[in-house]
Length: 103
Image (cartoon, rainbow, N blue to C red; front, side, top):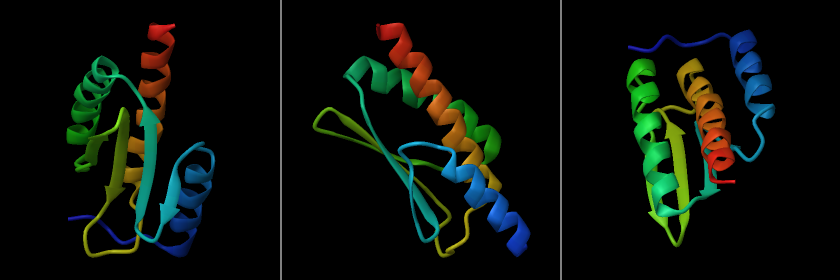
């Protein structure tokens, strides 16, 4: 079970999320669309699964027209958790690594 966070913690999470370029925040959900080819998508989802399992976060990942769409949320709540923001940051690191390897 996830703990509810005080306003100070929510502000901290919002500040951390603001540092992540490309992520949009809508209520209790954060989203990102990445332009990846099929092999890059596969590499990202494999790496993401390991981190998501460790953080106990279940990302919604979809592939559409050469894009990878990622949505992180806790169903039934409008609050972000540290896990979602942490996973978003880790996804950004993974994405940069994968893209750099393709160059």
